[in-house]
Length: 518
Image (cartoon, rainbow, N blue to C red; front, top):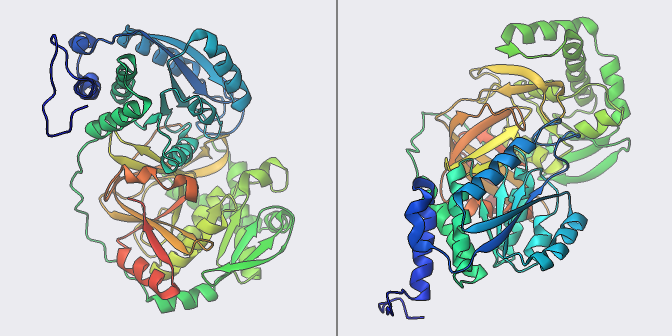
């Protein structure tokens, strides 16, 4: 191939290989906007055979997980297969589903006879490990997020591919079908003799070309008040995190000076059982008076949720703690607790305390530290990235509706079932927009604080996945945001306010490093 500063030679009206690949990448980028007939100049030399694999538990979801129990994947799969066949007559598509490695290996073994040229893997549920086995074939792989369904696994697995410099995997993280089609068009590179590396690079180019340019990141005024790093450290030492993970009890190593104590499900359940019924009824009345709407939740469920709030608050008082995190679903499904803690966590956050999901000690320590620093609640979430909107969406079934602290303004909230299993009671908080947010995660083993910022721009009402979904436009490089999930996991903790200076000051005071992920 010619160096970049030399013109391509033409023979018999043909461009050089590099020129053809560049042209096809450009065709892929504008595929979203043009009919197939306008791409005739990129007609491939070979008709490729492409296998699509949908990575999921089952076609009709039987278990609680994203997007939700009972979800029917068939309409999406049929529609997607039909669209691919219609839009790409120059390719032959074969469709399969797989739950994990074993089924994927059988598909790939059979594909040796089919002479498959490439793969498209859709991550439909979060943690099914299919794409890893497909990537090992060395064939070109387009990896696609089914948003609010497979996004957790998609982010973690994509990050691992990026860290390992996996050459044959390109990816799509978009709610817009045109972005998928543009990336599929990059298989023309393979049909015309290009390499898998060139294919993956071209998918990145189409993704970047179709991602909107940064919008107006100016935010509403926000008088954030933060105490000094030294004061925050002092407050951390006076704090305590309770962790209800199972029936075991004991102490754990402090994180950023915060004592950690494990308590049993039995203790939490006893506090729930003995919660004052009149107090519980008063809390239910308050919820009915203040919630914008209560969707499909019985009074009995509200009463058990209020009792769980009172129980958790009394356990915190007994242990002189200001934070509790619980293995919520494990405790509930195991019969160890008998009410979801989601509404209780919501109330604790509004009180200036910390209630955190899934016995996630690291995220809870993040919440305690920066609530101590600012007086504002943290919002623990499972993020989703949508390049078509240049957004990161922070999704969870728990959130405060006092984003600026207990004495600050309130925002509307709806009480709904917990999304994944359609049981219990949880919160959809319609969080404020046009404010700067700071998203963090601390890790004592690394001595690092993960950091990015985003302007809150919308609340997503999609029924799939968790109830609260605040959408942010990242400050910085949205492409860089794909990089840290395999090292840090899925959870992030978001605070309202521009906390960059106090976060860096705190990191300096404890000798930690700030890792900017955007």
